[in-house]
Image 1 (tube, rainbow, N blue to C red):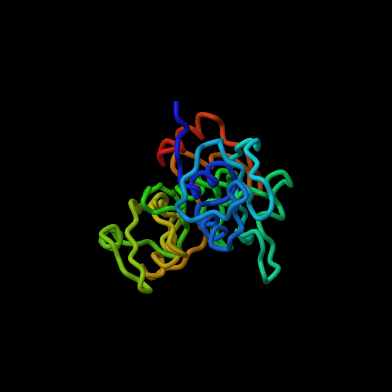
Image 2 (cartoon, helix red, strand yellow):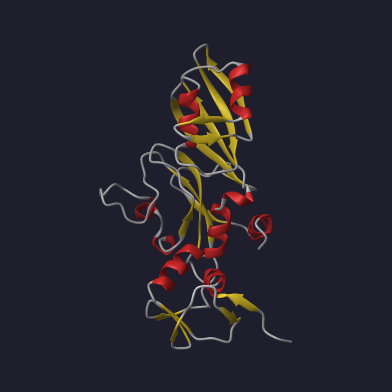
Length: 243
């Protein structure tokens, strides 16, 4: 049986913590070698039949794949290095998880579910809008939108030159006459999308908490805590993006 040919970007992403975009960048910078020769974008290689170096180091195929769920607290930045020296999630994660790549982002003043993984291809696919992965949020706001306003948003709106069309938006709990909690489900990850949506409605966000990505729920995981995804959770998640 012949070994399967695979594009080098996908092959390295499948066997490392690098995303396909990161691999492409390294190839363009001539930092990836295949059997001692500079790699070419789109190059096809045999699975397991090549010696690959990434930025001077051999590609390690023996690392155990890890994907974790992390409950990001408010006030923390989702990035590996912040030029402004603000606190990042990688400073509060256990050391053993600090090489993982975050899948998507939550802004500084948002909290809740964040996924991190050593699987570059999984990171790429879960971040790509074409897979329409659901992300569910609980959003406390300074106001109570009308049914008509909610209907208008569900039909799709353009604000700040960005088109926004949530899959779901509904009132989950009316906290008071002038405050409520919304459930919002999105399938894209545009920057500050929910905050722009709420501003369009004429209100402000008081609290923004992501409680679900695809089949992965935050449930009762405490703030600043993490856990490894169970095998069945990870299998379902991968199946959703064709892995």
